[in-house]
Length: 253
Image (tube, rainbow, N blue to C red; front, side):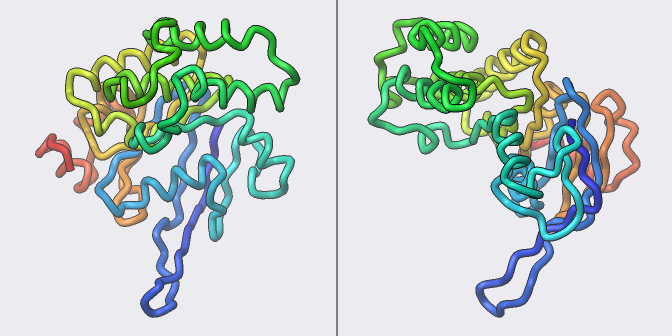
């Protein structure tokens, strides 16, 4: 589904105007149905990579192909990416309109889908279906974000992402603000949805434990470079010093 070759990203410093390379010759693939964990410290380039993958930031050089299409080549290709990719962010509070009810939050995505596929019938029923998929019911439809717990609101955000019927969902630190018990509940939900809907996930995080729980493969990113990309089942056999450091501490970075 995804192929990244020699991808680089430069930003110009506001202090001295010099270019700084924040992503350096990245090479990796993601197969349909996989869950790839992208693990690294703050400032390693994780979120920059995520913005490139969802179409928000054009790379300086190298190649990014989504379903064998370069989304940055033209508007048609960018549209193809936007039709098939959703994102769930860390800050579930800031990512929703506080004046919208749960139904209105999900309806936003359904309206976007209608623009792509034509008028949707039975939107209210579709909202009910999406809420049920994420473990909520119709009693939540008329609640506002401040009336929900963090876990409930993140479930709404997941439902909103699913409304677009994506083939790929990127999670950018999507569970890091939740307590440990709720994190496990959300990860169990995501694993269930992935199997039911044949979804592909990219799971950006700084938490090694969630990667080993969720992902098939893990890619270690340090100072803008991939130091290791390995199957989670084989993670204990890594020879990479940075990966071994994280494994030995097994703490939140």
